[in-house]
Length: 108
Image 1 (cartoon, rainbow, N blue to C red):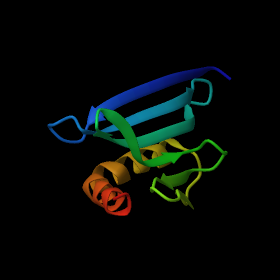
Image 2: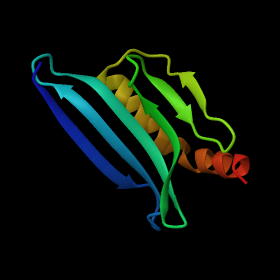
Image 3: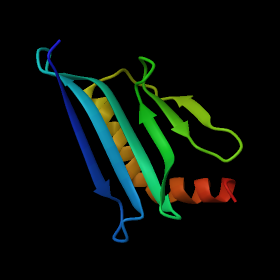
């Protein structure tokens, strides 16, 4: 395998307190994404707090939702692919405010 890693951090709003971090391993030989991670972070008390993460760490795409008392993991119904990676980014970008509200409501 000839793997190249790409990373990116982009603000979700102007204050810089909410941002999305993406990481992807691209196989140059097959021209496909073979692993990825997309995380929504919130900065609280000068600490980076993960809100939601979609990744392929265990061989299948899945979602982690972080809560004070327990974390929830759900299957992300797709196979690892460039489309799945882009879908994960779009899902977090489109729902970041709701993700944050749910996180804050469950972590008070």
